[in-house]
Length: 529
Image (cartoon, rainbow, N blue to C red):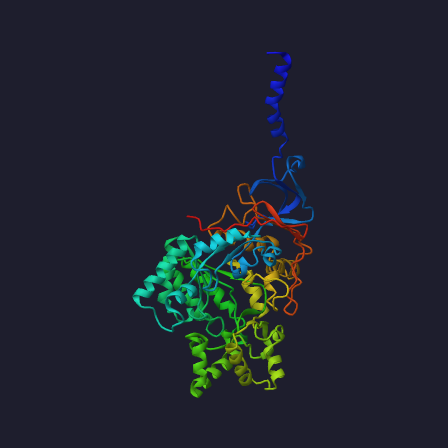
């Protein structure tokens, strides 16, 4: 071969090797940060190398930036696993696939289908969600209320054997579609009409596939203790891990009773039952206006309620039931504690209270007058409400319990949509700012563990999500421990979190330098088999 030809051939052979040598070893390198890895272990200084969708190296020795396609300087920032929200109302996901109100908190995985709700059937919904392009990862529970409504409507009765078999089959179908377990909303219609044995039978179907059970208790006010007892019974009889979801003590007569409920959790665990808790860090709840109406009156939906109210005897009974709930439960004994969040039939009420509405209507401040307005509002189409009926002492006590995880119970939202609960924008940053930095209820390591490693283990995703180690998926949240927090308030909730400049989902920044990117790397995650 001619020398020139030989040289040309060698160059041609070596060219791909030269290009390969120039390819970055990592797609992203996070340098100079303080790692809190989600295990509860003490923080340490380290660099984190990411290749594609995985963490490949966490090094206490500084890494060479030249080996990475991009570098983020995390000096002064905490580098943590992405937060996992175990109780999220992500029903608007297909209309808000960027999930900005969640992602900007540092959330990289949300578990939908809480309180007995969620999509049914699950499999086609997951396909549509993935096709929408997601800003975060999503996973789902299969909902008892959704299944019961599908099979029995809103009937106030026990299922027939055939109906129970159909419900069990729907739970199994949901689990086969990838659900992580089953949720109940036993305070809501139609779940309220179920007996414990029905819930046990359905929970066993979820347990057979390795699922968990998350329980919106049958009562969180005067019946709280019995509600916790029922959930523990289900854990025992169905042989299933249970999460007491958005755990709280509702109404002044029950304030302080978390001492009892937490002791019940400890006792159940001492007997070998797998009982845990999740919680949001606020002294108000959010749910529908209908929670102020005795559940028996809601059987059959709005038309049936209207018929009952036309009967003077039944109407008197229903109104007295509303008064009692206003006095001892979500009403907190004061109509100024009952705030309108979203009111499709009268937007001017959003942000106002039941007291304000009574004043506007000139009916006086009595609970009896307010009860009539509650029923009027429900017949108008109901409303989303914020109830200021939780004691700060219970919030702190529950949060500090070793089996409590952080979860928002928030909804995906965007500015201009009503006056929602601020938890939709600020749950996780509020814990880090208020309860770690200011009140010292938790250490930083404890808080991150409750947001990452604990919920990942609950979902059997340990070693995959909620971790910061080689081999974990590259879901990473970077925040400034000195400024992280939530400016969202109950009167001005539409404010995004502060102090969270970077959120990385499957190796791709979705919040970059404090701003949302156009990237949508989120995935629909199915239960591991």
